[in-house]
Image 1 (tube, rainbow, N blue to C red):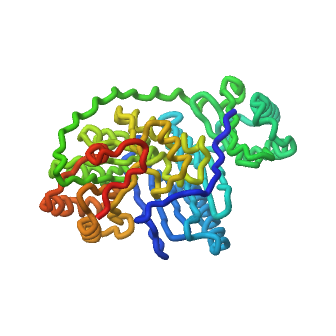
Image 2 (image 1 turned 90 degrees about the vertical axis):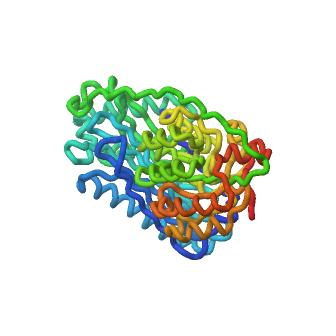
Image 3 (image 1 turned 90 degrees about the horizontal axis):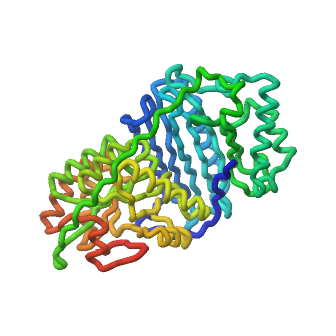
Length: 462
């Protein structure tokens, strides 16, 4: 049995140039080139002065699969916004609600995928709510699988699975101390409502926080190896999965000597990689012999590792922007560690590079984030020029904003998920180069500025 993290805490600092006025900024991106055949990822964000939302939405070619998933997501958004409305007077002025729905995807076979949504929701107060929702989909049959598709259920199977769940729970003394037997018995009687996922070797039953526990255990997973369910398994549904591919570690690109009297800026790109924009950005950077730093989301790298590898092969700096774009100041120490480490692992697998720069989502950090970054040998990187490309979605506006605010030593915030940003880049780089600027990585810039340690590092302000 394993216990997912519980999120706590409210203290945070947000970069001043990320403050949002009373407006709603909604962006949706469909990613149609995936490493998972038949499954693509849609990213939806919404930002206001009262709340933020970041949602990963899987899409397939089948409406029979898409519809129930999208219906569930819309219900989460509706409930969240209703709570925000009720708590309107408590929010704003530094306390912002958020809804983060992160998606963990595993391909069990070439045709069967297990999708686990983790919902982190904060609408005021001190505790963030966390729930989960699993879906197991059969891409060949275009259907969401039921528990009875995996397990040949009868009274004997039902009793045996309940027995195995209880045995696995009792193996963990710390968790078992808070398990409430009456809640567990009531939950196990409703097999149709059980939350479950499968891997190549096990069936995992998932319980929401407080569903079977009287204490703040967080989300609880109970893993039952298939070998213990051998006589009840529907063998036709499960086949051995393929072994993951291992990539060779890439060598670091040599660092060039920089003129201390030169004019330098660091262009940074967040939230990618994204197949419709990132390659366009790379083409423009190559044309202008510019190096940049890409702050990648672990989830995006998981879906598009070949795009991440393209960025690395082009000689750009690879950095981390967390796994799921959640507000780290609302997380426990263990959850913060998970956001750092999971992203590093995904990036290392895709590119051969372990990132040492970290940009917290929304520019939000607290002592816990700083401490973990410091202990992990990472530097926190924010920005001194916000292109506001996420807000304007307009190439001309991006060009005007950056050229107006940039100065020698600036760190410029852009995103390689907006096509309008890619549209702006050729003219923006031409204009900046005509002003004498050279484009270097963040690591090169902060070394030139003789800055060291965890930071945070913002770059120079005009």
